[in-house]
Every structure is written in C-alpha cells, then in structure tokens.
Image (cartoon, rainbow, N blue to C red; front, side, top):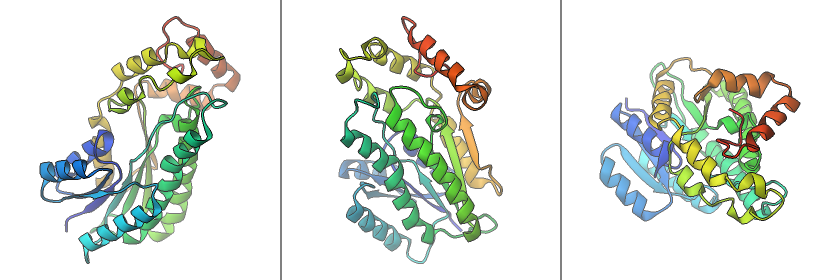
Length: 286
C-alpha cells in the first residue's frame, strides 16, 4: 500500500528536496505551494504520485479549502505522514522590529503550523506495521537565542515546546511526533535574507549589524547541503521507533555543550566577543 505524505512549503528548499527524496522511494506526496506557477511547474516535473495544493497556511478560509481538496484527492485513502516545513525568518533587534513583523513570524511558524497539524491529524492512519507520524522542521534556533534573530528564535523555541506536547498527547492516538533541528542549510533563505537588517543601520546596533550581510554569506558558505535533511526525513519515515528529535549541524557536540550546559553569562560573553570581531562569522559563538 502506497504511503501518502503531506508537506507544507514544497516550492523550494527543504520541502522541495524532501519531496524529491520521498517520491524516489515510492511515496506519494501532496505539497503546498503559494502560486499557480509553482503548482504547474512541480506537477509537470514530478507527474505521477505528486499533487500540489495552492495554500497560504495563514489564511484560515484558504487552508480549509485546501484541506478539503486533499480529502477529495485521497478519497478512501489515508495519510501516513505530515511534514510541517513551511516557515519564514523575520530578523531584527527585538526592541525595534515592527509589531506586524513579529506577529507574522509567530503566525507562520507557530500558529498556522498548529492549525495545519490539527486539520491533518484525523487523516493520519497506520501503514502496515508502521505508525503514522508527524515531522516538524524546527531549528537549532529553537535551543539557542541568537541576538538580532529574536522573532525567529522565539517562534522556534515555542515550536520546540509544541512538539513535546503533541508527542506526549498524540502517543495515545498512536501517532509518532518527531522534531528535526537543522543548523545552517544551503537553501534560498540566505539569499532572501541579504539586506534584511539594513533598515536598522545607523541606530544603536549599527556596530553589530553593519556586518550582517557578511555574516549571512559566511553562514551560507559553511552550511550543509539540503540533501542531509531530506535523507534524514526519509530515514525517519521508515523507522519503526524514531527518536523524538534529531539535531543536524556541524560541530553538534560543541553546540550542545554551549547551548545546554554552559552558564548563560559565559555564553553572553562568547556572543559579544564574537560580535566585536572585525568580520564575525555568526551571531552565535559556534
């Protein structure tokens, strides 16, 4: 019996590569896109076993309409998996970023993600000996609060909590919940982020933010290939007993040491020492 997987945000990045990986292994994928052009492009590229649904997950009416399209497409079939991948980044000093930008960050990365999850849960069913599963694409930003990326970090911190709650509650419905925490990954997000902090130059954080684009480019250069994430997703889909979380980044042991076990005032000093460099590589010390 073919396994159907619903993925949010498949037009590029992790969502697109995960779609390719799953299709190559015989899964059927239903993915959300935000434009007719992307729907036509992807359905033309993938053809069989793929369906694109135009959906802005923050639009309640549109989301309900899209879910109804999914139900109609599936008929008497069920979903085996849900991958909550859609997300955005709104960077900026927490005391200066607009209320609208902050709210939209929470809406996409947290509130809308919950709405999607709750609409999909009734459609998830076991496939042979494997329990249905929900994978949340979180971030290492969910465990490390990097300055000037506050809204994104806050949204991912909250998502980490939501993952735990879903996992503990949905266990009683026979649904497995897994979080994947990528570090920097080579996707379009870096190109889209260039210039995003320029609006804050000339203000109180000018010294730290003047190198923002340099940091973005350095981070992208050192990032892992997106295939690392899609292959992990594929493995998680096949496991009978997947772990509750997978952190994927270079220098994972050192990152965990600093994030979980190092006194916060030491971490603060590491951050500021790094930012005071002429050409810092990151807003995180590792």
